[in-house]
Length: 301
Image 1 (cartoon, rainbow, N blue to C red):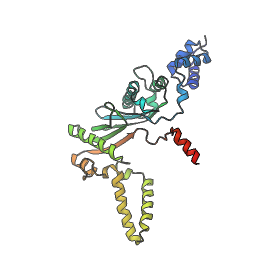
Image 2: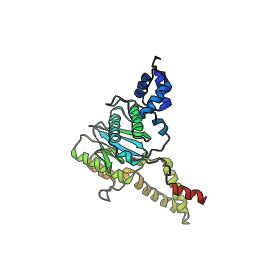
Image 3: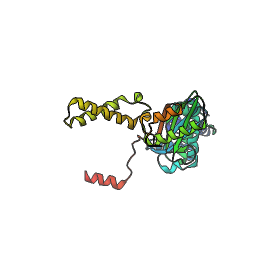
Image 4: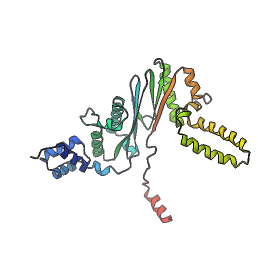
C-alpha cells in the first residue's frame, strides 16, 4: 500500500474540497490510490463541496459570544434562508463565535481551530457543505476586549439567544461592571442596530466620505446663487448634520429622541471605545434568480 503522505492528502483536498480527515480516511480506504479515493469521497457525498464553492452565499446567520471582558461576533453565510433554520448549521455558527472569542478575529486562526467533533472549523464547514448541499463560508469576525467594563452584545430578531441576522458589539470601559452598564450596553446595541452609524466619532470617520459629501454640498449650495461666504456657512451647517446622521456619538439617542449618544455615555460615567455592526449579507452581490425577470430584461434589450 502506498504511504499516505501529507502531500497526497493535500492533493486530494485540492481535487475534491473535502476535509483533511475525510481525505486521509479515503486514501486509507483506497490504499493510497488517489482516483479511487476521489470515488470513495464522491460515494460518501463528501467531494461535492468543491463544486458548490462558486455559488453565491448571502444568507446564513450572525452569532455573538461573550465572557467577562470580551465578546466576539461572526458571520457565516449560506445560499438560502432555509439553511439558517437548520439546527446543525445554527450549532456550527454558535461554535464558531465561541472559537473567535478564544483565538481572536483572524479568519485563518478561526478556521484552523479544532471543534469538539475533532474537525477543524474549516473541515466542519466543508462537511456541512457536503451534508446540507449548499455553498457556505465564514465571512468575517470581530472581537472586542476591554480592561474593565463590558463588551455588550445585541442580536436583532434572534432565532435563539445570540443568533440572528443583525448583530452588534459595544465596548464600554468603566471602573467596574454593573447591571446599569449592562443595560446601557444593550441599549447602545439596539441603537446601533437601528441607526447603522459609520464610525464611533468624527475623527474616525472616513475622510474620503466626508470630502465627497462636502463636494456635493458645495455644488448644491452654489446653485442657490448666494455669496461664497454664505455658502461656506451653509456647507459647514450641513456637514454637522451629516455627522449627526453617521457618527454614533453625535447621533440622537433613539430611546428618547432628543439626547445625543455622547451625552448619554457621559452621564453614565463610562467611555464607549468601540462598536461594530454585522448585518447578514450586506455588501454581497446577489445573483438574480427570477427567470421571468431575466427573460423580460433580455427581450427588452
